[in-house]
Image 1 (cartoon, rainbow, N blue to C red):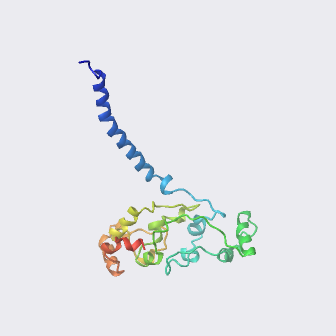
Image 2: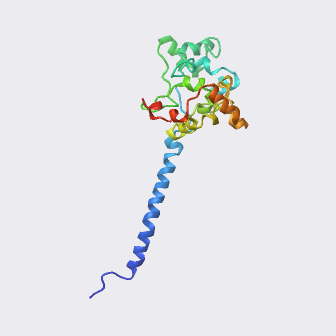
Image 3: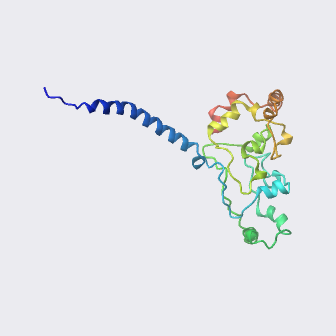
Length: 221
């Protein structure tokens, strides 16, 4: 009977047996890398705005408290975006002729709010409440980073569910005294080597058990 396969077929078969799994593994690795890259997560990418608002100037240099602009952060699900009137409290007196502030002046004159571009944009199926986190000792920079160093604001974390669950499973690693919530350089007690104090704050602030915090209903309602 004539030989059906050439001798080279053995080498080809071995290459396929070894190569296909390696190619699949490489593909999975590439997809994983893309999924966690800034291109997908939007981390560390400054977001352009109709007015180039600088947290570095307002917070870092002038020391303006977060709550002056984000008035709802301690009592509402939404931190809130300041209305034009808040901006004009200062800018009716300061930098009144600056060209970059023309959209602000126009907004006040025409009584139309400025349409800001979202930096931290959670999916519609995710429920997030600013006030509960702030009142439980999770300060602004735990999620937003040190905005006092941001010329233009960017997203400092992935905002993926896996990232949220890290804190929900181990809140003692991220908690600090509530009086430091609005300090852009706030440091979690764990990072100061004060894990016992952090665990005590979890009790003092009545942070619920990780079982409750990781229940699907907590964030998906």
